[in-house]
Image 1 (cartoon, helix red, strand yellow):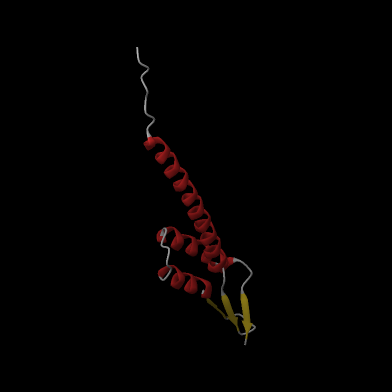
Image 2: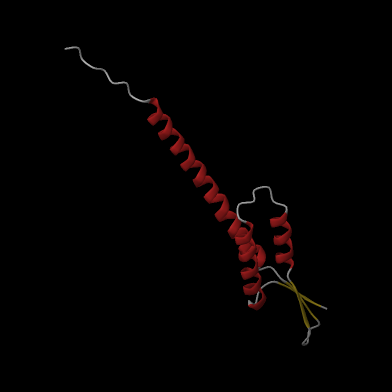
Length: 105
């Protein structure tokens, strides 16, 4: 009785390689996305607050403006809605926080 030989499929090897490549690419995009969210968080909290030294204060959301422009014109548009939401929340926190650029006239 002759021995039957089974041919191993090369499809399984190719599938395993493509899964590894997809995993590496996914990890790279996750890192880019996390870095972009951190950038938007810091950028959104930047305010210029102009005062006359007494009571009148004019806050300008300069970080929010630059963040919106950057989000609208960026090359890698991963998820724009999440980026806008992070910018808005950061701007709200930055408005009430006691930091930013204060200019006294």
